Length: 278
Ligand SMILES: Nc1ncnc2c1ncn2[C@@H]1O[C@H](COP(=O)(O)OP(=O)(O)OP(=O)(O)O)[C@@H](O)[C@H]1O
Ligand SMILES: [Mg+2]
Image 1 (cartoon, rainbow, N blue to C red):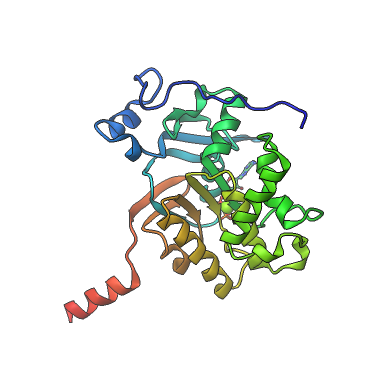
Image 2: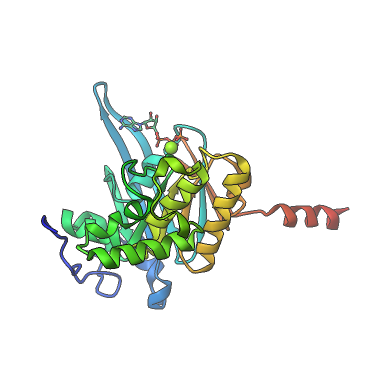
């Protein structure tokens, strides 16, 4: 393979080496006294985002603070236009904040070069989008293997890892098919396999069931449940209360601010409480 490869090593400042010069105070104090494996995956402090428009800066995110720990399953909710995708794009390092701090897996994103950021993103995060985003002329196997190409992984290993991921999402026998030969739910499974191929510790999913009927959506959510049980941290945007029930924590945006952040109140629990009250 030709082309530029990302550097193999990230600079040695994570929580372990951090000082207040490299990490913001709140993220440092959240991390204090914790074991290495329990350090936050995401710590966001005082985050602002304004888009440049011909009419001037258009504020979308306003003073957002959020800490997400390893193994959490967080549903991000809120009305259309409240800033959910803007926030997810910043968490996924696809966009930069206008102000504030973002610490991903112990590293202050603002201090990384482009190559370092690409390496951290590829190692840490798997993305799943509403529109699946599969390349139509490639087989499912090649779609899933694509993130490995950027790492310079050899062809045979790419194929083996892609097939292992397709098996994991129940599509092992479809490896040579084209995306237009399978259903929307199956395409989303392939997109999840692609997100997993680099073994990320964090999955960011922006309305992954938005294009699916409710039954297929539930099947996709069962897959996310399994991944979360395996220890992968999940942050998932949804408009649907039933989908958000799969998460253990719900964060609600309104006009670019977090207006609610709390444990999911599960249907059964609230029904039991009703019975106790009766
Ligand atoms: N590139 C951009 N330039 C200017 N304004 C933008 C841009 N992207 C988004 N916006 C605006 O920012 C606001 C928040 O958009 P965002 O896509 O984050 O909302 P959302 O909560 O994800 O909405 P939805 O539920 O409809 O997906 C909206 O008013 C949107 O029009
Ligand atoms: Mg959105």
